[in-house]
Amino acid sequence: MEQYKIDEHNHLHAKEHQRKFDFAAEDITGLDGVLKKLEAFQIAIPSWALGTGGTRFGRFSGGGEPRGLEEKIEDVGLIHALNRSSNSISLHIPWDIPENAASIKSLAAQFGLHFDAVNSNTFQDQPGQKLSYKYGSLHHVDKAVREQAIKHNIEVIKYGVELGSNALSVWLSDGSNFPGQLNFRGAFQRTLDSLGQIYEELPDDWKVWIEYKPFEPNFYSTTIGDWGQSYLLASKLGPNALTLVDLGHHLPNTNIEQIVSLLLMEEKLAGFHFNDSKYGDDDLTVGSINPYQLFLIFNELVEGMDARGMDHATGIGWMIDASHNVKDPIEDLLQSVEAIKIAYAQALLVDEDALLQAQQQNDVAKAQEVLQSAYRTDVRPLLAEARLRAGGALSPIAVFREQDVRGGLIKQRGEKTVATGL
Image 1 (cartoon, helix red, strand yellow):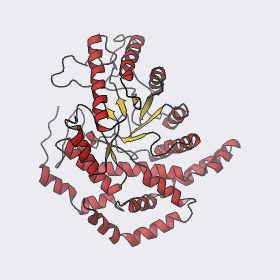
Image 2: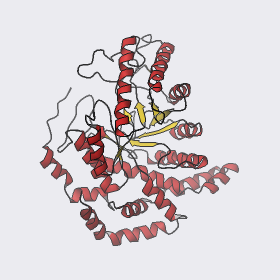
Image 3: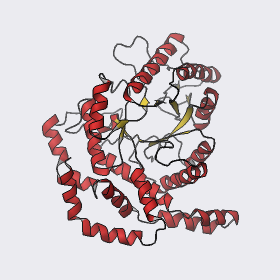
Image 4: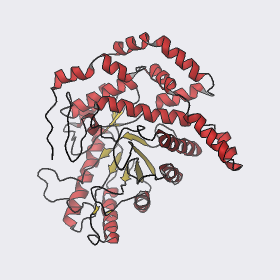
């Protein structure tokens, strides 16, 4: 995306933007500080999200999807050029193995990108793999299977070191489908022992992020089923082990904002995989179902990070993890980043002094008014201004469509493939 095309779009819409921005900014205290925080706030893009998602029933791929890691990096570079808020990419190994790390790092740098956490994969059997993960990986009753999974995670760390990453993200599908299939205590202890061996291989400046999930693909139990089990593992491993929160990995109506508040207080919050959920782990576009919950989560995060003097942009990890089955992947990722930053901006506008006073006085109605006053503020002009100051587009998706970027990618990479059902 040539910069002059973005500049032309911004010039064409400058007057309209200025009118909206002036109106939105009129009553905001500390406006410049808010804009600087918005400009600094970056959300990592996962390499696996640049193609069309799917379900176990099938995948309906679109045209112009990236055919390899290099083209995935190019797509993230495009996203970052448009929104100036996505300056890092997170790799999933072995889906995206950097065969030449120096070359891959150089390519990413050309787009102003660096590498976020690297993600291991022991929830699938890979071609040529000696032993199967059908009955688990790090918790498997067979020591040889556990050693294979441990070795894979250590290899992922080595790839990450070459790329300049500093965190390993671990999600396990380990669990059971039927009562009696698994000894819970034994499975948890084996998982802890396996993670301990991985933990010992971490470079001094690295972290391991332990993700949790209550169900799927196992539906009776998962060995790391909730934040308490992840926190217990992280606490036993040591200070460089933290709990990773995926917003979709909770049972309906779970109070996620309370969870993240406590994890942050205990210095055990690694960061987030952002998505949204209607029924379960739907992996929908973040903010598309419950934007108010997203705002409440960010309210706790901003308050908690400020209490500890943390930098909002770098204190914890921010990454999208969604499955856009019927949308253009780039458009969906642009929407996701926008939704995250809207919630963040609204949280920055909360009158913390007034909220604290209402809490101290048990004034429940006033506390609600304070929160919802910030939530109902249209902060989109603030985000657009922050993008403008950073060289991004006032309306990223509009530029993407005006320039027919997807059409260009289809010409370069090919038409869509025919989907097959299962």
